[in-house]
Image (cartoon, rainbow over all chains, first blue to last red; front, side, top):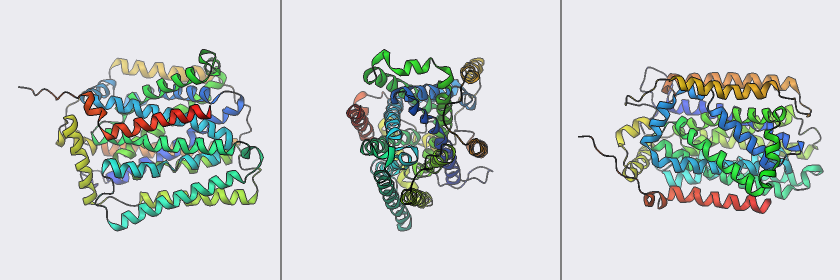
Length: 428
Length: 37
């Protein structure tokens, strides 16, 4: 991949763009977990997961459709057909992980479970090194930053695990099951980035990848629901017919898909070792929503709070240490070798792939939006509006003052992230 | 004369370690989900 210095009139380097995308992803992915609090309202984890994934699927066809029309997306997919199976696989991994997180949230709470599955950055680092040559040829300083960050994240995960076991109250009752579920989700979500990275080393556009990905996750969650949650008698189908409740999960899916798009761009421009770490700042935002909006830590004792706060701070420091390890030219050369492997194995044009992987496209691919693109956006948006007008505010204690503040942060971040992506790559 | 793109074989995908790793982890995750169920 070309070095991260800008090749256009823009002053934004690919590294800076990746960092902006990673941080924006963190803000949105953190907010997306809040609606799963509804699991306490009596629905099964599968029901919550299916409703949220249905929301993700519909949300993908709202405004993201206008960023690149369907003509562009399906041409892109057609040129790299072999990646379809990887995108479906990634969707399956996400779906299983998401269902595990609902178990985890139910057993140990959002504020605790969130940081534990965010140890997925370690898994991503491992796969990045072993499978994609990440950190090969990196300076000793960069290796030290990444190693230190990884160790800090492990320590933080252990602290947060102990805070659960010693927390007492309702969180202690099924703590082990919750921890196992959260760690399982961590493994799934760390491995999910393998298909992500493969797609972007092959020059695929994140919007194309996400399109197939949503089919994979919807199909997997639907299958899991039918197999493990009483088949067609699952509470999922009752939930999907309850628009007053399902809107909030659709909203969670909508917020998630925005976060994931930014996360995909971060993985594309930074690699998975660095990209996951940055988007894992969603732990901070998940904690903010859990503690400030839902009052999850209101009854925690001093020791419990210190472990949560200490673990959180260490995890963020670890993630930032990894993120600040800017790739050198030698490391970029290793990345180019990984691109070459893809090109030789799957018959891709090396020069075009290198350019596409850096957000530059030479081809005259059809970028027009057709009438059906607008029709798709209208239908998908209408689904959200129809559910929204019938939405009932959940019977949960929420601090609306903090909802407003965190909402403003969401909008500011998407504006900045969208502007940076548009300016540097036109969403390529 | 336009070049015909090379045919991507199932074998190429199934023998790709970058496919096997996520596929095996997905199986493990489903097993965990069944165990926790």
